[in-house]
Amino acid sequence: MPSVASVGNTIVVSDLSKALSLSGLRIGWLIDRDAHRREQLINLRSYFTVSGSPITEAIAVHALAHRQAILARLEEVTRTNLALLDEFMERQQSRFGWVRPCGGTVAFPWRLDGRDARPMCEALARAGVLVAPGDCFEAAAHFRIGFGAQAAGFQQALNIAARSEL
Image (cartoon, rainbow, N blue to C red; front, side, top):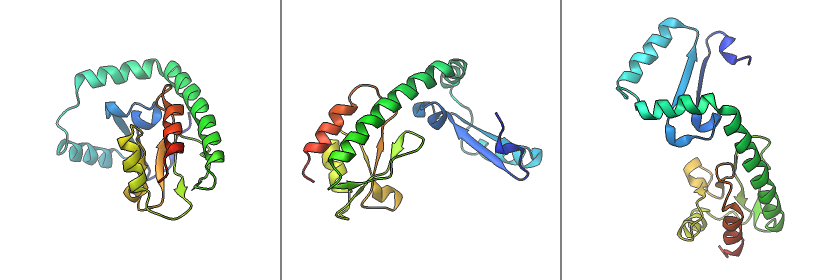
């Protein structure tokens, strides 16, 4: 695939968290055409991480070798859950606004009443539904919903959120 790495003075950074929805591995990469800068960045990294986990690296290699299967599953889960989220947001349009994501596996709706979303997120967490409060992103009325990781349980989480009166 063409890469922005071919543009001068550009560093490309990515990871398996975004590329394959494998955030627990904490493995990524950096592409830099500038050999001197690349060497400096590798040296800088050594101040923070002496070495990676061989087990995690082996899992990453396996995941990359089987990326088509992982991406096919991710696409199916994402498509299904996004359709459920579409329906939820339609039913909750008096409470929440949103811009439907055109890509990725995260949505960032907001409370139409402008109130801080943190109390709602904390109440949902106590009920077993994890959404990130927008104040983590300097947007207090917003909340972040991930919809791409799990095939099971998303509809139940939306049902709990719909019943909340926060």
